Image (cartoon, rainbow, N blue to C red; front, side, top):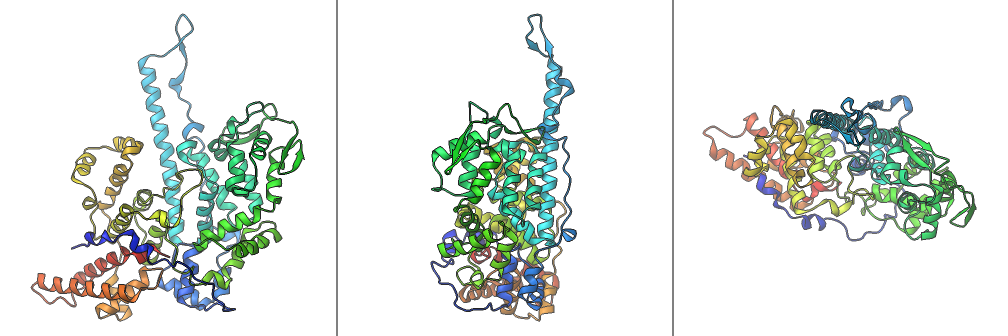
Length: 555
């Protein structure tokens, strides 16, 4: 028995849980307890098991915060990508030029077919490399060995946005991600300069096409609007002049190069500074502008707190950044020790994005799920790593929740728990089509935008082959002394939720679990209680119900 129909709780029920307004707590200190500890572990990482929360409480706030900033020797080693992938290595032996008597390029059909096959193989190899790296990143998030770096790498991935859809090179995308990971907690200024010369970014924002006499303004515009100042702090003339300064910056062979021939060396004026400015000059001008630090600080705080900061709060943390050479670590240390970070308006009020939901669920249950469940599950819910929807990255908050995505979240939770069959999520038509596909056809299916969802679900079907979660919820209940439906609900809610369970929701869960057990007793001829296997089934169904609630979408 599973509870697929219980996913029909509508998203507006989630909206009702979010506080409309709340004032910051006036207390001078922080009440460091399980609730505040879990809040920190949710926002500075991707959740924690009850044992990890207890350990954080025992360590104390200061020690827990210190433990988030690892020395270089303790950081997760990076994986070197293969450069000979995608277009950076796409050189076909079958691509030799053949000309007719008039000098026109021609090619025998067999050469064209061979070249086409090699290009297809290259694309599959390239996507495979990116898939392996994505799986590695998910592994690090679930392992929780360097949670804050993983958290901030995800933040910068949506801040300094590029997409494989446009870049079409796993090597460049992985190279960029490792740049973000390395600089995630360091100087924002250093990171800005590095990203501005990153080959994936230069291509994504069309600066490869930016040259003297024909400036392309896209890169300059986004550097001002999204990376440094925000809207309203520059003019169209500033963009035009900055674009001229960035002429000649391009990628060549997946490396940064600056072409003197393509660069406009004439005089320019950006934000009131005039001279023969180049790209580095413009970046320095933007960093020194009074709007930069508040913009960057505000973006970080809003991401981690889930609410828009007040002008005073943004100004304070802008001062923290400016006073320490835009050191992100300094801002985060002060933020995590700030009582306002733990105010009621913030704790348990942020809608979890797809990756937060899937990784947090896995970490709370201490389960290492199949990689395909994470990669394609997050894609199904709208947050595919390395494929952000546009230059602004992903929208946060309630934008994550629709009726369809809400149901799919519950379905994915059920699949992880082993109480929902992937086949039950697919329609009969989808099943008939998918069953007839081979691997190559499935790859082609995924590349078709209109068939994207079907391709994702097809990949998820793999979970049904041999996946069985290594859970022992019945043993957990026994260890916790939970011998009643109410006690079981309390223990599971503590394990699975990043927020406190409201009294009416708790009563609902106790009632549903009691009815489930009564139904099970009627369906068997032997006594219900004490049957460990059936206890486990019931508890997994209860866990599935909990993870399908609006409360499970918050952290």
